[in-house]
Amino acid sequence: MVSTDREVAAAALARAVLIGRAVATMIAAAAGLLLVENRWRVVEVLALVAAGTLAQLGALARWPRLAALPVAAIAADSVLVLAVLALSRGGIAYFCFAAGAGALAGVLLGLRAVPVWVAHAALSFAVVAGLLRRTDPPAELTAFVVAFPVAGALAGLGMFVATSALTRYLELSRRLVASAQRSAAASERARLARELHDSVTKTLRGVSLAALALPSSLRRQPALAEQLAGTVAAGATAAARQARELLEEMRLDAPDRDFTAGVHELLQAWSGSTGIPVRAALEPVDPPIHVGYELNRIIREALSNIANHSGARRVFVRLAQTRRGARLEIADDGRGFAVPRDLSRLQSAGHFGIVGMGERARNAGGDLRVESAPGAGTTVTVTVALEHHADLVPRVPAS
Image (tube, rainbow, N blue to C red):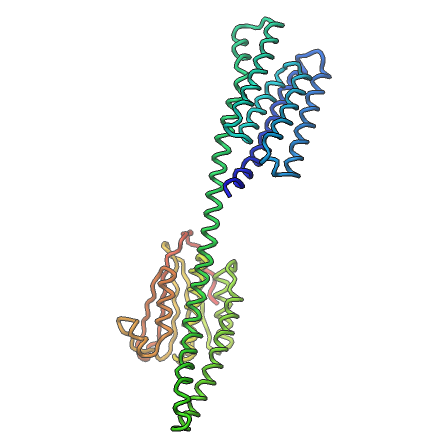
């Protein structure tokens, strides 16, 4: 995979070098239109640079793996450099183009491009020597011109560093994406296991116990056997229903859906099916996906408890965003119950729903508090810390 990352980085930077070299060379050549007598030669250089660059970019676009064949690419580019030299006769356009060739070699070959840089530098020094023999420039200009041949090597070293950095960045990005995918898959498997454990598994365990007792009681206690058979049938039906409900809920679980809107629809649907009015005060909250899922399941479990056990006539739900996270409150005016200090004691009394809600709150990185008393209704409060904090926003009007 590292070689693939380098190929991607080399192809991307090669395109950037080709475009940058063409722009710099054409600007330098175009500036010469005002300084030379034979302007057609400058036009020919411009046309050659444009056509050569377009051909190279087209080849990279059609065959991206050309970046993995650097020798052939550098050989073809060197031919183009010689053509620019012949047309420009050692003008500034050639030196710009040659510097770009050194940068391209640094991208494709890395430090193996040293022979290419030496060859380009030797050719450029020969061109500079010829220019100095034909003209008598000032000393300051001579020093500047003599520095041109080393520009290709410096540009090549810079692009080698850039290619190495981009390759490491792509490799790190790929590893992070792969790690996130593995984490998401593990989280989804854990979530499915938790849902099966909380619903279908418990029902099937009861069915299994009843089925084990059925053979021994079939002859000795026919009435008990009949009762156990009914238990097995009812348990199997309940397990099938729970599995179907779980699958339906998972299909409806849309991670990219607005969380607050989903809560509002859930409350309306529950109120319509139970006939119990719900008053909601919902602030826009955008929790992470796993937190939103657990909060949604807590709301469903709390509403199920209200419908099955509380005898409530109305329900109030509040969803608020705090400076540190979010707070969810679900209150009813039902018959209430005595809440022990340790909520885990409710499990021995058969109140598995509240225990499960507490576990879900902890899975979401928060905590759950239950306030109730006989005849005083029940309030379930969940507070969670969000991974990203947003400013407080205006509240949606109560429904």
